[in-house]
Length: 520
Image 1 (cartoon, helix red, strand yellow):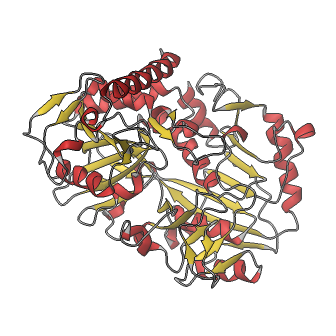
Image 2: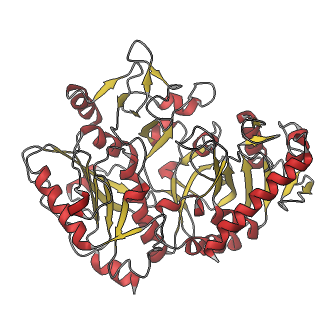
Image 3: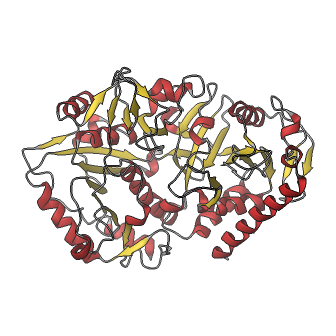
């Protein structure tokens, strides 16, 4: 029934009337958008040729202000809960849409026609209408560009309207605050107001795919990076922000499929998007050469500080936010997989930044454990990462992407289970966090060690090695890994106080169990 509803409603046109103006600019080239941004004094050209902008009040997503219209399509399918997927009435959406329409009537609008889903069997056309030229540059960078022939007869399945300058009236518009993001599956329209943070655009589009693709095509949508080696072996890298997803998937001798959002069909792993959106805080050429090299003409830097000359980015500056970002087209990233499509994966990596210092740097999971950690989506916040965080705090984001997943997490877990059962796939838990003690006591695992672990697994160096059983987490830990000191592989051995290690590990297990109880 749900599939029939979606397919039937896809015959209905999206709302129109927003692009019929002399001040509407369509599919402008990046150089023009950059020039217009600079002339409007909304951005700066950096020494590397990138465009640097400030997204305004919001330097990150506002998940508590993201809503889904509750109707006959979504009512029985969306997992409505008190943390994500908040319902809103269609009348609220209609009222705000028409207010947006009036607001934009005599203002400049930037229209961009793009595609999502690199696998042509599932490709969907999207039209994005933006208030600012730099928002349009972000859309150009992040989504798949249609061919000239496709543009001639372009008919969007969905449209996105992004208007940072429009503020809702919470009292009369049914919103919590002046900013909002609302997804309407019946009208196939997303409206975003009151926030300039560009990530709201891409994440709202992917939320739509995360709803449609499982129901219509039995595809597992994933918040993960993916790359492929010379032997046609695909690897997936799941992880929350700060775990190293983009960094560890950018490997010089492997081709990048994508760094953030993918679909897993019966025969392919395919990128949803056409660009990369990477964090730049503490970025250096030595540590992350692929990302550093991609920051050039056409790239869009967000909320980055500057050195005294005013044109050289200071990637260590977090005065505006620690969530500094850069967006750039996928081909800027170096070696890219043809058509951004790969094969069924041989290895899956669950990346976690364990600030409690109790998880091993690497462990091999059974399929049952893989499902458990997938549903858990564990990482940790460290002091200073957010206002009010003064001690390491466990974070559980189901399926490693809770804010963007409209369906119940078990829906996605069931799809993953079928994929694991069908193929010869090994799943690994990689701790990129602390060792020898929690944050403030222990030391963070060196990036070079994490890279050596990934390299060893991808090259098959761990296939025939001995694995030891971890007595607390019941994980299989390798006794040896090339390029990694043996003494760090056993997390308990790095703690001076073994009793304290056992206490912290038990506390973390209890938090896992408490979180899992929500889904049983």
